Image (tube, rainbow, N blue to C red; front, side):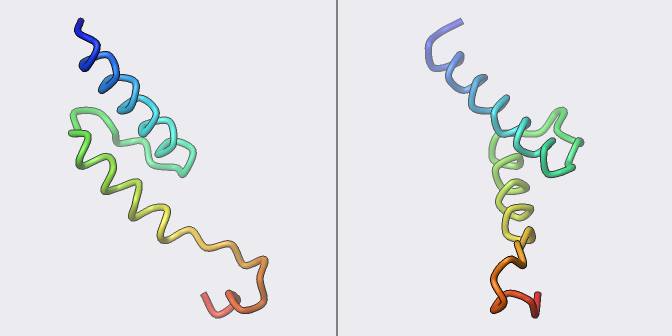
Length: 57
């Protein structure tokens, strides 16, 4: 395994772990691009209502 492949594998695993923490488990057979897009969408939809200005979410 080349260094680039190892780094790519580590990044994909990290993205999968973050997705699992957000409750998304369908990560098998997905490309890195698909996983990062899904992670971005999930992060955008998670809003913490700690600030009174964010209560309308």
